[in-house]
Length: 271
Image (cartoon, rainbow, N blue to C red; front, side, top):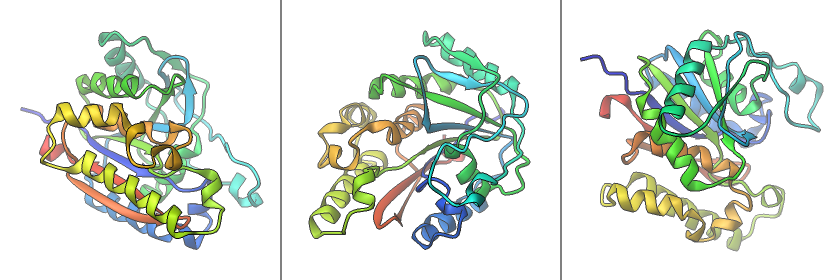
């Protein structure tokens, strides 16, 4: 029987275009993403849930050749000349929409929206040839953990061989702290939340009811609101776990902008 389970990856995508501009604080992230791309079988298509797109209902890019959205400011001119000319995949977009609708989750198609940096920054590192069709799925602007777990569960019905689903966010996302002096207290808070997240997503000793409960109530984790004053960069992880429904196969920790950040991978071979 054909295995249509996807590879699933939650990644911490770094600060704007900095990973593509040679920033030394992103070197570990860049090397990790290159390494992951070498391990994963080359996808036939990629579905990206980006922290940088919110809508009132889950919305899917359905254009054939979406342009890039340079949704950042204050960077040098080359940051606005980055190219990633991958195609869209209207057929996959329709499949995603049907999967959501069949699960009772109203969804929209958007043939005009481009790809934001939550997609093109990590994919330019992982698949620089830009020869894999891509589709982007929005978050829902209620920022409900349960809503995003449900979106992930709905995507289980997708049947696309060699699909890669990426949750593009950041396991630590406190903008003020990125640019504040490093202190023992801030490092301890960062690590306490990361350790909770690693246990939650990776431990074989937690059953799926408890794992779902922990993610649904993520804001009760140690220093959760210090690490995520607003949760949009964490919620792509909820979609990934909702889709996977099991502990991650691999976990990576990298230092980005002087903060420990995590990535989680679920292999389709283990599904």
